[in-house]
Length: 209
Image 1: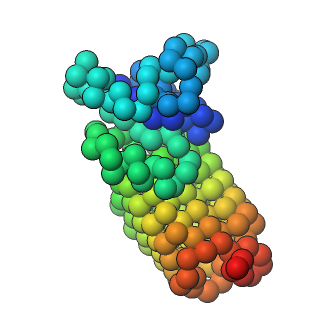
Image 2: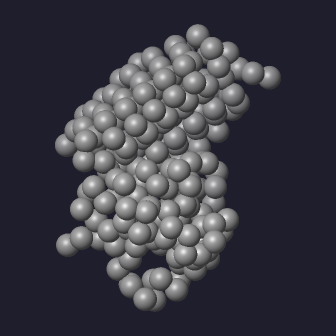
Image 3: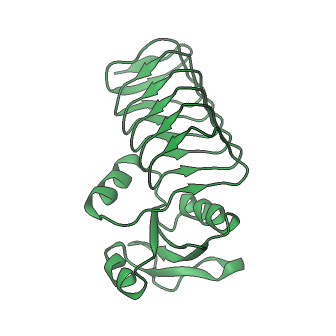
């Protein structure tokens, strides 16, 4: 049975999620966004519009008890705040072109984008983003609200703490742990554990004070 989904957030990330949902055979009913006027068309080809504000979720649940939601917002902390504030039935969006091993675990509300690869025994938390072309190798543990950006490579047995952002094109060496609440800059290379919150850039990475 096809699912009906409402996306929270009508920006670029939300539009990408809409494409994944439609290509998966499910239906996007529309968007909720506090900063875009109601009835604004977001996806012209499908005539998908902004239906209301973020706090309108209960209205749509009353109209359709089986409706599911997904948070289409790239900011990890905002995604966490919405998910913890609104206890909804959350949809998990997986692009048909992604490659996911049979024993991979993916938490509710997460997004796996086009051409991403998640190998055996990896665990992806809730409301994560595994972006376009990202590689999550075997036995990785990606905690809740993490964003792994396009073309990042996480080698085997990497652990990434909650709310961390892995930049585009970043490489994380195997058997490396990255703590929570970090930003790893684009194109960076992490070759040893990162145990202190902060922003890290460079090859190999160094913390920006």
